[in-house]
Structure formats: structure tokens, C-alpha cells
Length: 87
Image (cartoon, rainbow, N blue to C red; front, top):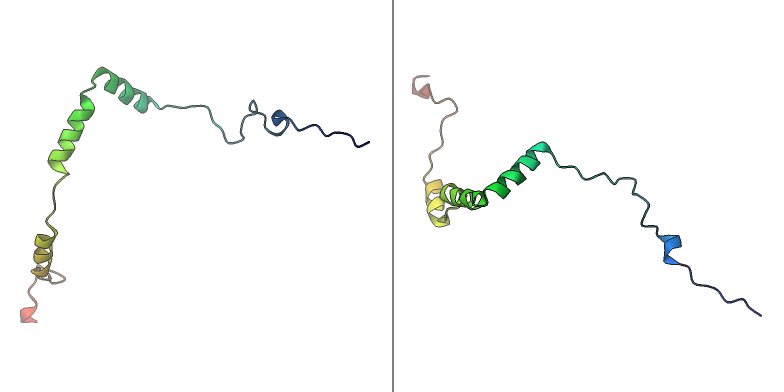
């Protein structure tokens, strides 16, 4: 009579209690801890940062106008302080 095979248990193939060779403990730098605490103390800080970014960086660009600027550009001579007319 053939013997009935018992299915392998999942614990024999995968053992969740073993640690990966490359796993490291969770680390948070002092600077990150400071910023996290600051954001908890002042929740409006991030919204203010976004307003400042929109003021300085988030601009609508007119690409056709930039094409006109680039088309009208005059090339500068290699050394702008001397005129090469007299040589």
C-alpha cells in the first residue's frame, strides 16, 4: 500500500521569525525627528511652504513667447571685453 504524503507545512518553507541579512533596525535622524516635531507643533507650516513655492516657482510658462525670445537671441563673442574689429 502506498503511504499517503502529508502536505508540507508553510512554517518549514518560510519562517517569519528569521531576520533578513540586509534588514536594519528603523533609524530616524535627529534632523528628521526635529522636522517631524516641528510639523506636529505647527501644522500650518506645510501649507505656508506650499504658498511660498507657488509664489516663487509654480508659474505658467508661455512657450510660444520663449520661442520668440530664443529666435531673437544674438550670439556673444567668445571674449566680450575686446572688440575684434581692430585686429
